[in-house]
Each structure stands twice: as structure tokens, then as C-alpha cells.
Amino acid sequence: MKQLFKRYGILLICLSLIGVAGLLNGTMDTLQFHYGKSIFPKQVHEQLLGQPRQFWDPTISWKNKYKDWPHDPRPRFPGATTWAVMFTDAWHLLKALMHGCFHLAILIPLVYYYKFPRWIILAAVVPLNLFFGAAFTLMYGHILLDKDIPAAE
Image (tube, rainbow, N blue to C red):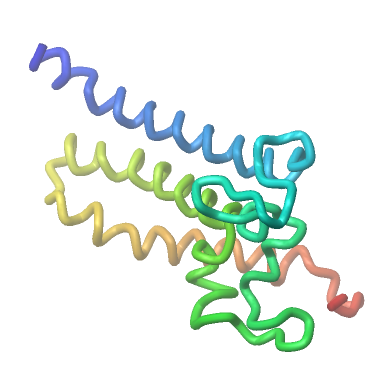
């Protein structure tokens, strides 16, 4: 059994992490595109996993990033519109967890097969997130925007 795990265990762990990432992504898309026919709260007083509709429903949860949208569009807390957005709503939390699964699926084999120290998993999370975030911002905030069209608020 130990030999079997040594041979296939890391592969199974990585495939499981990718599977969990798929589950998280499916939940994100359900929130975004099929909220009305999902299991998520529809009424203001309803909750799921201790969280109200305001946390789950992307049509309103995006406002959680701000102090009092539209009257006070400042971030609700430091990082609420950037690096800590995952704490504002379900969609961004699920996205962060999905990325974490992918990062672990990349890092675990490096530690195991290339004998990197285990702390590298924690140390590499920051640069992986910075690299991903920079690439995302490049596309989302610059390259794909038409500079001639004013931003709608």
C-alpha cells in the first residue's frame, strides 16, 4: 500500500485538487448564471451556511466591497476592492479557493518530486498570486478596455 501511494498518491492528490477546483468553478457559474433556479437564498431573511442572500447573490453581493454603494463608494475595508476581495462575497471566495487548489496542484509535485522544502508551498503562494493578479489586471484593466469609451458608474 505504501508503495502504491508513493507511486500514485501525489497524482491522486493533484487530480483531487483539480476536481475540487472544478466543483468550486461550477458553483461560481451557478451563482453567476443560474442563481434563480439554484439552492441559494432567494429572500432577504434566508441563509445558507450562515450567510444571507447579500453574500451569495452576485447581482447584489458586489456592493459588499463598498462602504455604502452608491453614496459612499470607498472600499468597505482595506483591500476590499483588490487583494482582499475574497472576503466580500461568495463568488470571489470560491474563486480564491479554486485558485488555491490549482496552486497546490502545481506546488505539491514540486515539493515531492524535486525535493523542495515543504515551506516552499507557503512561500510560493504569494508570488503565484502576484503573478496571476498582474496578468489578470493587465487584461481586465488595460488591454481589453477601449480607452475611447468612458467608464460607466
